[in-house]
Image (cartoon, rainbow, N blue to C red; front, top):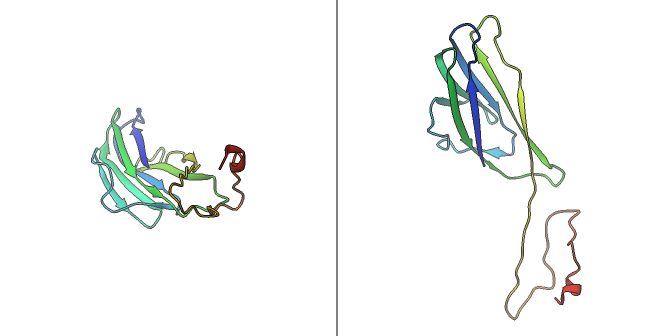
Length: 142
């Protein structure tokens, strides 16, 4: 999954050192080298908190695009949404931090199974506890 963000200083009266804090869900796995090369420096604080240096100083009108690559796995059967939180922290004494912006992503999986050959298994088992086929396979001639 590629998560792209856009941060900008829309005129808060000056230029300030600024960082973007991204809190990723624990299910999101990020390899150390998979940040975008758009601009800025990235730092990992712990398993779920990433920091992106937006500039020292981020001047009025400055605009910054960046991206992060994640793999999301180990989702529970009950988890249908994962959430990433974004917040900008700066040295601006009038407003040291922005509001937290949450990005909620619906998670859905789909699988198509094709069985060919002479020895077909009697059953195909899916690990989802409440999964049911949309149509009965015997009605489709299988």
